[in-house]
Image (cartoon, rainbow, N blue to C red; front, side, top):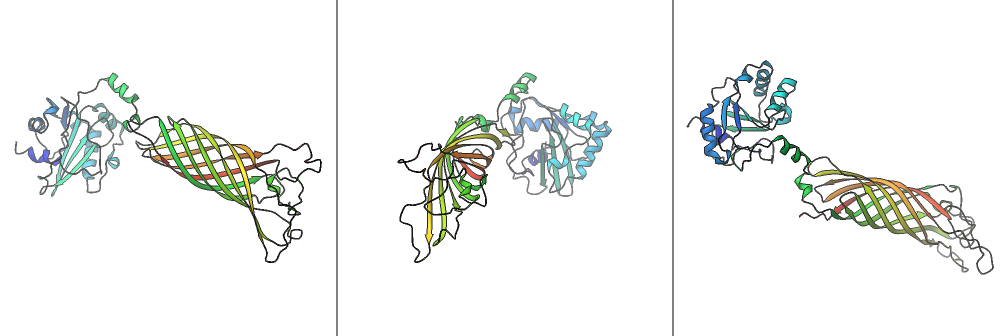
Length: 396
């Protein structure tokens, strides 16, 4: 009994990997000791007696020496290589078995606990193989001195019966608990920035006169072709599949005007305000337990209003017979996006696509006179934006 006590106390040592999930404990399971020639390894009877004392929920564990592994050349070489590479910074993923035969041995013992003990100088190691993994499920290291006050026991906690094949298949279909316990409705607030690039129009076009202008087919005959943009959006998503949101976007464009025919203008810019709704349809893949990626398609409808600003030179004579007229227009957009979310709360989002805005053509003169001069019958542009989303996802 005294001989086995230090080994079980080692199970209370701090695992090398931070915040590892506890081992799944099976009732009436089989514990096999890997024979590696270390006299520090406990006897099977002593191991089982102490396991029953440490955790009665383990039922009647069965303990034995894995003699068949001692006769297997591939596994014996793997055990020798593993014990030779046990050191302070050892990680389980770095100690995985490469040989197919060794992997098959570990997979066949998914319901068993394969234990390997090693003592080197003042360091003591316990290596646990379980659940069919290709490498150690746990690496526990401790010094001979100071390990007796460790309380957290590796094999403490509730134990469950060994599942049947049917139960395993049903468990594989179960969603991860982190997502299973979430409500399907998810509200999100997104803020971000991006860029806008005009498509079409005559890049060399200029506004001849501030108040009298020739109509054009594209706003890019009047506006510079690029601008940064800021936006905010609030929306709701159902089951991470379909969603709808309302948005407001601001951008500022420089006007293209002929300085020779527009004397006195120092700077001429236009603020564009766009508000509307966007719908999206996507699919979510789980990369890890708390990291998900959601590509989606976009369809939006918006209303656009312009507000121009003119900075006049000091002493300049300003026109008195009207102002440059910019009419509000409506349009739509199509595109695609992708969101990378962590913890169901914060997400990085990027979107790109094509947007259009237009107004109804004017077939009749106004007040019996000539057609009014209004820019842009139809406008197309490319957009690219990125943002940060805060999701108000709920858990049951």
